[in-house]
Image (cartoon, rainbow, N blue to C red; front, side, top):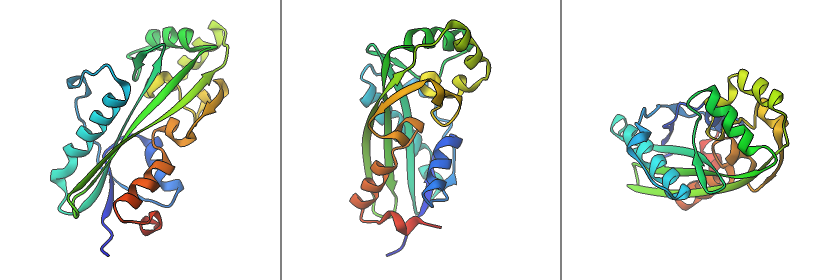
Amino acid sequence: MNIPQFVLASASPARRRLLQTVGIEPIVRPSDFDESQIQLSDPAQLVQTLAQCKAETVVPQFESALIMGCDSVLAVNHEIYGKPADAAEAIARWQLMRGNFGDLYTGHVLIDLEKNRTLVKCQVTRVYFAQMSDRTIQAYVATGEPLKCAGAFALEGFGSLFVEKIVGCHSNVIGLSLPLLRQMLEELGYDVTDFWQ
């Protein structure tokens, strides 16, 4: 069987690192898709639609490839949050999140150009946040890390200090569920080891 190139349609260094951790060295092609075009109130539907749009945007660049698109949002109290626009928004978000929990939704799309198949899935992980003082929130936001992440925190960075507990897939919170990726590859007829470098 011909093993296609693995393409990551994302500029996220965290997603790339997750793939590299499990032996997949992706070709990185950020989609630069304008996410503001998609307005949906259901978080699962939103992340799956955005992930698919991102993956489809890079399809014309390849003859034969396996293209992965991902998108993540955090839902707290039934409100959907992506990356905060600025530091003030990140501070307000953390004041809402502290001592609370949120559900992190990540949409995963695999487009197999060779087989002309597309898989669309969503993984949800519940994240419990620590109680934090305003001073700690301001110091964390001042690091700049929360401005780069859906949910205003990075589990693989300073943000790990303020996550008390996770229920569900750990790597999903970083941006890509590795167990779900393995299952999707199997559904397309591959073994994840086929992509090891």
